[in-house]
Amino acid sequence: MNDYKDEELMIMFKNENPAAFDLLFERYRGPVFGFIFRMLGYDREAAEDLYQEIFIKVFKGRDFYEPSGKFSAWLFTIARNHCLNYLKSRRYLEAQRTQSLDEVQSKAGQEAAAPNPENNPGTDREILDEAIAELPEKYREVFLLHAVEELPHEEIAGILDMNAATVRTNYHRARRLLREKLGPVLS
Amino acid sequence: MKCRECREQLSEYQAGDLREDISRAIEEHLGECPECAAELAAFDKLDNLVDKLAQLEPAAETILNIKNQTVFKMPEVTRKTEFGPVMDMAELADFMRVSIEAVEESIDELPCFEFGGKILFRRKSIEEWLEHKERDHGFSKLESDVNSILAGKDLF
Image 1: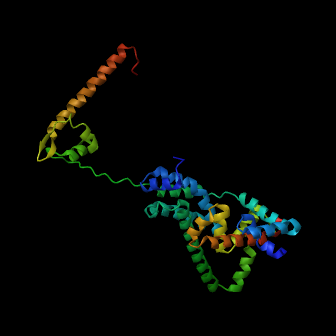
Image 2 (image 1 turned 120 degrees about the horizontal axis):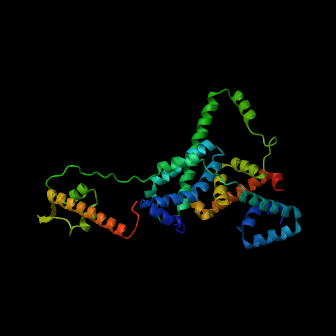
């Protein structure tokens, strides 16, 4: 069964073959979690919740999958939409909270709590992870899907509903921003 | 080509996303400019670092939750528990706790009759047939045990 393509497994899974779903889950459990975790800026609790929701959605929504499309594109589209919805609601909640608190006091508290890379620089990999987390969303998602998950630009274009040229442009912008942020680490 | 122009396109150059003439111009510039060549090396280093990014895994508890919530529900089987004196094939299958296919396969063995275009079974005849079946099975077992003892095999 290991030789089957994702799309073939998905058809078997649509026909209620539980082993097909298990295999798809094994193939994508790491990549999808990595994508979500990094998209959410390393918020593990939120990433675990979202990850669970996504796979349950895939399981329940198997009939919506069109066998003509790539399974990975379908799966990452669901994952990406969940991440964006979550980030949107988190931003809204944060804005609400800021308004309701004494802003000066809140800002002072946040600055004290924020990790300072100067005091604790970490490994090069950790510094890269931090830099990825700081990328604007539209660059971060393209960078993660192409550089980390190794999806081709054309497939990413389908996931993000944009043309492949824009995907390429955003990807290179992300790399340039990372190069700037990482400065001496890469020199 | 100037350094600024070159550096703005290094990422695209490295990925092979540029027109051939622009790529060639950058290549020429890189051959003459050690600072821009070092900048290209920085992009190589970025790629190496990305390749070494940790594989992230969800918690075991999360995986367990997913497994528990992604189980195919088998259709509920409702079996009849009370039967009249005459049964059709579906009722007989329920009566004997087997599938209709199993009844169809053994139809030549079963006491049955045809009426109104349907194959029907008298419950009493079926019960008698089952009794015979039980006795035959007991006898076969006894016969096989005797043969085993005669062959010197230990039964227990």
